[in-house]
Image 1: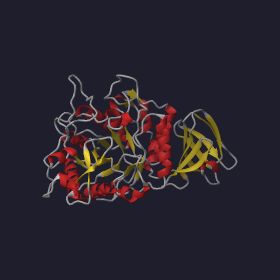
Image 2: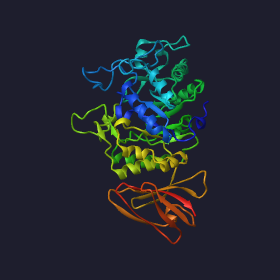
Image 3: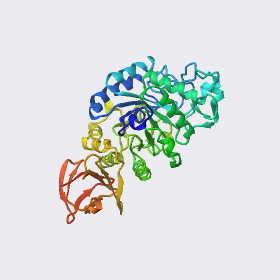
Image 4: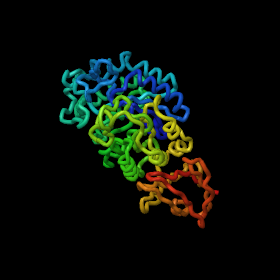
Amino acid sequence: MNDPTARAPAPPLGWNSFDAYGCAATERTLLLNLDVMAARLKPAGYEYFVVDNGWFAEYTIPPGQEYPTEKHAAEVNLDAYGRLQPSHRAFPRGLQPLIERTHGLGLKFGLHLMRGIPRQAVRLNLPILGTPLRAQDVADTSSICAWCPYNYGVDMRKPGAQAFYDSLIHMLAGWGVDFIKADDITAYPDEISAMARAIARAGRPIVLSLSPGGAVDKRYLAAYQQANMLRTTKDIWDNRVSLERAFAAWRNWADVGGDGFWPDLDMLPFGHLMVWRPRTGPAAISDEASAALAGQGFARTCQLTVPQQQTFITMRALAASPLFMGGDLPTSAETAFALITNREMLACNQNGVVGRLVGDRAGCEIWQTPDRRRAGQGWLGVFNREQWPRGVALAAADLGLPSGRWRLRDIWRDRDLGELDTRDRLRADIAPDGVLFCRYQAV
């Protein structure tokens, strides 16, 4: 039950509420997205429907509005044992109807969790289920998250610490949770291990995703590999900085992915973003501080160019990164669906081999991912890392291909590029921040 490979034999595919709704998703908006996911994404293999942070927060809602304007809620909903419960405001019927609807559509349900124990539970000194201990006995009040005020860390050296995590995960398993996105945890290997042990004891296969990136450290790799996904970047949004950030993370973590453990380049900020925050002032999508909890910027359509979006998802296909669509599904454009459901892109991603860098020169990077089931086949990406167009003329050796004859197909343009041998060169014009994404096959 605790075998990561069994839980996630290929990079998980799904939808996450954060890019569209921050911490303000409601039952109504989630049900709308769920129905579209079942109709549009499930046939392509997407299966995890994940509700991000804030599902427990009792925000104050201004009269006549659906979403909060405050960044943090003063109160969270807890049970008698200090475990988070669904917000009365956002989920007046609780989470069970949403979970049952998810499962009824043949999909799997996920929830976001902050590391640790709620500060409110510590203030009230609530009991820990199955023990004579209380919240103050296990909390580390010096261990706090810099950007989210809801929890303290749990001191895993103290009696009752593992029991708290066991009771929390057992409760979620009983609800029918299939996926946990654990946040503010990558610098705390003891709490990663505690959560992994709790999942192993819960009696339900639950995929474990670790977040946030930016503070990942390979010294903790053994702890990370108890999970299925590891965010290797800071938050990724629809800007060029995020492209650069993702390339750097791919290089750094390309040597450790596969076999149930998937380095994660973060969600796909495609389509209609930040729906819950209508534009009331100047856009601030490059403001890092605004992304710390509730999302970045105001309601908008993805600001990446089409070539940048193709680069964005080609990276994730070649890197075997989990794919979680972030845009609002009912209101996102067809272009977003076309990208994320492309059959060849998904075949490359679900192949489950993290691509390697085979060429890097003068602003052009070439990455290759072999097909693990078919010898002499695979995928490659020729990335223009510059902000101006460029032409390329590449020999087979430049593409990381051995001597022989190779047939190439351009995936995004859906056209054959002919055959390539040691005497030929692949010639192409690549847009600024664009990519030539190819399937290769030995002839």
